[in-house]
Image (cartoon, rainbow, N blue to C red; front, side):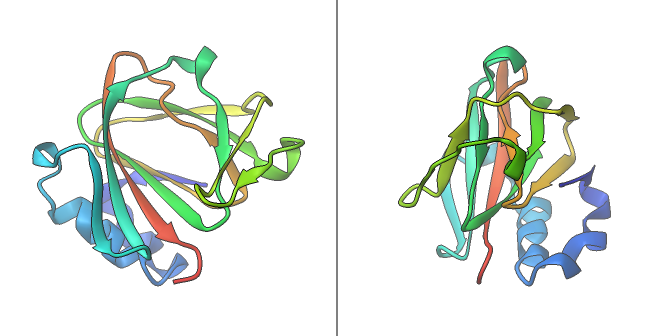
Length: 148
């Protein structure tokens, strides 16, 4: 897992061949103007999910993990609070292969505040509980294929 400011994104582009393009989208797109939903950058290899939705609060946020995608969760103008736990310690977490998501009833080991202008990267080994912030949240989740 990585947590940092978007201005420092260049530090992380070597971690994956699609990260440079993902961070370029977050930097150059007019994020406040994008409609909620999927926005393709490079088909299924890289796309953005724009989310405007009510946060659940930490008590109702649920751990999830993915196998085929890395999440770069970026807060546009609100703060999301996201739980984290090392996925192998979550116990049983069956993955829906079609949706590439599995859920766990385990509790997060840590909570992070992803403030406006910051991002968090969650790799397949990082179970995460997004949408733990309060009120309406506005974020962009870059979905980066593990194997581009």
